[in-house]
Structure formats: C-alpha cells, structure tokens
Length: 132
Figure 1 (tube, rainbow, N blue to C red):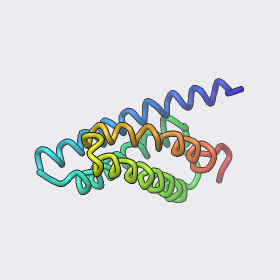
Figure 2 (tube, rainbow, N blue to C red):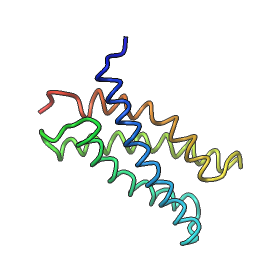
Figure 3 (cartoon, rainbow, N blue to C red):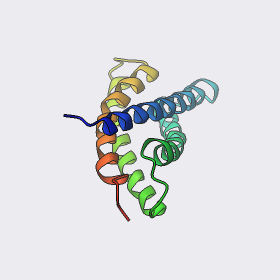
Figure 4 (cartoon, rainbow, N blue to C red):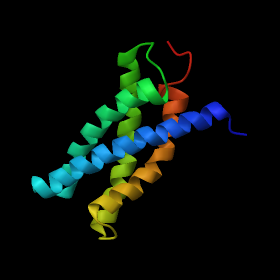
C-alpha cells in the first residue's frame, strides 16, 4: 500500500516536474526557433535551466528539505538529474533521429519515461529523511 505522505510527495513532484518541463520546453523552443540552434544543442542548454529551477523547487517544496549538507545534496541531485537526463536525452535523440516526433513531442515522451527513475532516486537517496 502506498502511504498518503508518499502520494502527497508524488503530487508535489509532478507539480515541480511540470514547472521544470515548462522551463525546459520554453528554453528548447527559444533555442530552436529564436536562436536557430540545432535541437540537440538547444536541449543541452534547456536542461541546464530546468536543472536549476527543479533543484530549488524539489529541495524546498517537493521534499521539504532545507537542512543538512546542501552542497552534498546538490551533488547527489546533480548525479540523479544527469543520469536521468542521459536516459531522457537518449530517448529524445532517438525519437528525433528516426523522425518519430518533433523535438517538443520527443521531449514530452522522454520526460515521462525518465520521471519514474528520477522520483525514485530522489526519494530514496537524495532527499532521504534523516540524512546528515
């Protein structure tokens, strides 16, 4: 049985992820349309913006962890996000490369797939209660 606190945390994670996705998609759109970057370079840049936004929201809103070693926690967060991004980027690039989806549709598909991995790793490792 899934506990209510875990469900609530999952809902906050989805909210934060939505904001991160909008940040990511907005930067991707700007990069590909306004700055004429290729979709792969634009995606790397958009990820950087989304990482910063979601770190702050996940730390203070989703997992409500404002104590502890923030530098170590950020390092762990970056590891999870980078590995999650690797999974996300492989899926995204494959979908764009085989011309299965536009960059924004490929982003949506890859974000959904990597979300489960990311939430699990953050909940069990990065923002684990009672870590020092």
